[in-house]
Image (tube, rainbow, N blue to C red; front, side, top):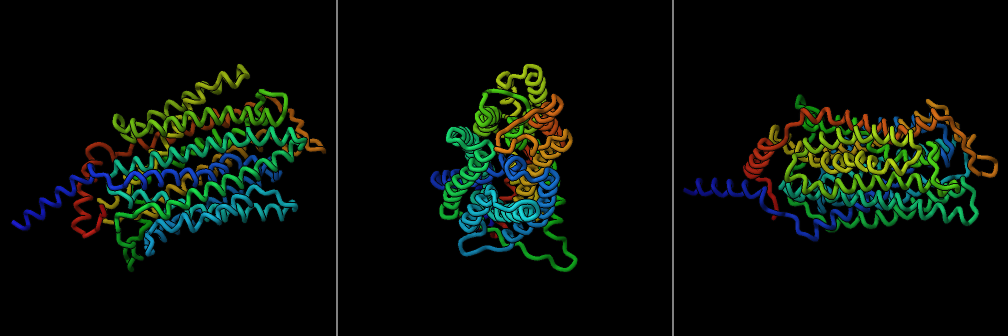
Length: 499
């Protein structure tokens, strides 16, 4: 009878996993507000670093292209190392919680240095840029991998975990809106004060970097004191002789690899934000006679449309979960985004009026929001699958895959932007006179090439990223069964889940 009673208790606990809420409201909101802080620094970097490197520091496009690619080669090593550190070591403050507060000040400093224009040029400038960029990426990884691993240990309920991630990414999207508005405020003020076009760009980016990094990291670091790790997973151990490595289990987790491949192919989603300043400078759209005001207005129009589509999708995503699974959301929105991008390209090019593109720009941005929230939830579900199938859960390594994919996607979008400069022979140094005033004259081919950076290239990328998801099958009854059986497996192994 005692055995039957114990079995019945375990079955009830297993069933209760999907019904019980483990994260209190205060903790829930602090986690999501921290995402806004973290993404302020990231959005500043991802949205403007290429424009700063090419048009302010005047680094050669080939150098910027090689820097982005080589930095990602290092990330291929660095990100898994951080994942293994998280999986193998638990401090007395927790496995994930210490890292946000530890990395906050280094990220503040490095973000400021990234957008600071030193007095030296040529080779010393290239060395300075490369060192700061690589160190920023390493430090950000040390905060990003543990932070987005937290939902895995805050709750065993996959629905609650998905809400955490969804709202976290939504709050992160707010940071994109903030970073989008700042140039509109700072640029015209500097121009009105009499600064040259070149000097105004330099000061504008430095002010943005300082304000976003300081405010953002103060907010982000609070999660170290407010989050609670409820699932006490055992530390991952080094493999014994002849035993398969942790990386083996990650790379042989089919659902996880499908999400990773899809994430890499979706690199174009970053271009709608990152390429906006380049399109504003060189695509031929004129919304003001003042150079700084025109850049700000055109770029702001593109980024506001992007923010509306992306942020709107992230806001409604939790409601869409009730009707569509992750697989369906990814496929449907990416295909819609592809066709919207084609229409944007045609309308914008033939009318030469960016305002006519507003509706389709918003629609083409919807996949950005869906991918931002759904891909993280799919990674977590894939880690559930790995633990269910193998008894191992490499949470840190799994999150490191997502971190690497995000940085790789950001780098590939930068590479595409820089490659376009090289393909159509845009010489930045010839666009400014000796006083620093802009004097831009481009051919129609060059202008179309730059416009394609926010239309054709992202559209094709969205279509490609949907293809691997057709094979993803952690949905419906299979997902529910994995959740139930995983709860039973954890109870049998004595893994505690705090209420």
